[in-house]
Amino acid sequence: MPALVNNGGDDDFYSGGSFYTNSTDLGRLCSISSQVDVYCPPCKRARISAPFLFGETDFEQNKQPSIDILPDECLFEIFKRLPGGRERSSCACVSKHWLMLLTSIRKGEYESSKVVKENINSVSDDVEMVSSDEDDGYLTRCLEGKKATDMRLAAVAVGTSGHGGLGKLSIRGSSSSRGVTNFGLSAIARGCPSLKSLSLWNVPRVGDEGLSELAKECHLLEKLDLCQCPSVSNKGLIAIAENCPNLIALSIESCPKIGNEGLQAIGKLCPKLQSISIKDCPLVGDHGVSSLLLSASSVLSKVKLQGLNITDFTLAVIGHYGKSLTNLMLSGLQNVSEKGYWVMGNSQGLQKLVSLMITSCLGVTDVSLEAIGRGCTNMKQMCLRRCCFVSDDGLVAFAKSAGSLECLQLEECNRVTQSGIIGVLSNCGLKSLTLVKCMGIKDISLGAPLSSPRNSLKSLSVRNCPGFGTGSLAMVGKLCPQLQHVDLTGLYGITDAGLLPLLESCEAGLVKVNLSGCLNLTDEVVLALTRLHGGTLELLNLDGCRRITDASLVAVADNCVFLSDLDVSRLLRSVKQKHAFPEKVGQDPGGFESPALQFNQQSNC
Image (cartoon, rainbow, N blue to C red; front, side):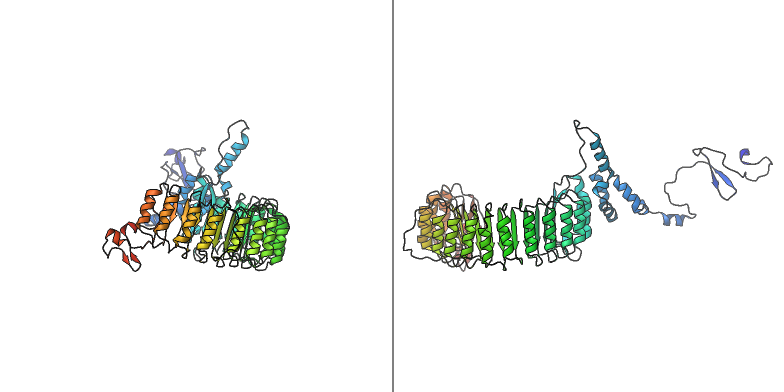
């Protein structure tokens, strides 16, 4: 080694700089002191990057996997450069730590998204463009109960990015201890900018922070449904209004912190709003609802107001400015009087209203109902539930005024009698009539003769009205010979003598017949039904008709060739004498059940 020693011949190491000016030379000088350099021959690259420590035991103790050595900043930069959704999903499966890092990256921060956008901007219009990495939001995810956690939301945020993008998300019944929080909703916001529909039900730990983060990232949001979200206030709703101009449907239920301020922001900043539903929000009053109606009056078509502290003023606004409304539902408005409904009808602003449903509103009387009929000339569907001040006079006056009425449903309107029903059928072209639990309807002898038959009524449903008996059935049969659908559920008082005239008067042929709970009907009715309408009958429900026997089933099988839905549950009539079954077969307190009748629910013929 003459080149490494001095000319003096002594054994001292040469002190000085490196002999090689090129850093890629095979040899290298290792400094072991400030004045001494030692030449080291080339060697293989170390397999690990850990510092060199003397002693095998120390070396083994300091050897760590690379997943723990790389800092989050490096992993963040690596993940940003992943080419697609499949690679991101694979990395998310490595550990919870990696999943959390991936959810912290916004969709637009991935390098692949930036490159695609640059390529799209650089090509001309006549060249086929490269498909963008932006997702269109085709996927739907629903998390319920124990499955609704932040970890699952993080997994959804990462996993859906490469499979069409998340378009609709529903979270229902989140656990109060380990359920969804603002963190999980923020992960969805960063990873799913294509989200168009969000539904949050019973998520007490999600508040304004999570909703605001989602509003900042998901500008395509069109539908928002908040139910039992006690932590969401006007602040979160204002954030939605400021960042989601495409909002078309808003539903708020049992959110005690949302009030007029949030609704005013929605009305002002969301010009495309078409549907609103507000229920049981104590802070919502006239100012919030009326400003929302005024701002979106040109496009708003569906409105539901339930259990709110609004007054006659709001209904006056609806009557004047609801010119685009087609569906209106009012329920439990205890502070609205007769005057409010009267003004709403007489304002003549509800010319496009097609469907109106009013439930448990004390202000609906005969006077106000007639005014509504005059103001809503194009109404086709009307439903009155638990409106205790509506009587025959108001109902008949409404039917005369609403000339376009096709469907009428009355539920627990106990002042309506048989006379009112006859007046309705005689004065408008109804196609469907439904009566539910109307205790005022009873069979009475009519002094005046019935008017000419109305050929418009196709469907009659009378459920759980105990006073609707033989006389009422005969009256309906004479007035409505074109019936096709008949539902007489729970009319345990009707007999064969009352139902047979109705069956004989139906000229068009019955298609659906429901006789569930009609305890006094016998085989005579079923035999007549199959003989007269067997060629058209498609549905037959005999649930609970305990006097029906196998003879009826034989007739059904022989005559009803188009029958697709048959229910013969709870048929307990004894057929022991016909088939000589042993007494112990199917015996119960109600009689003997044939093995042929032991199938329940629905059977196909």
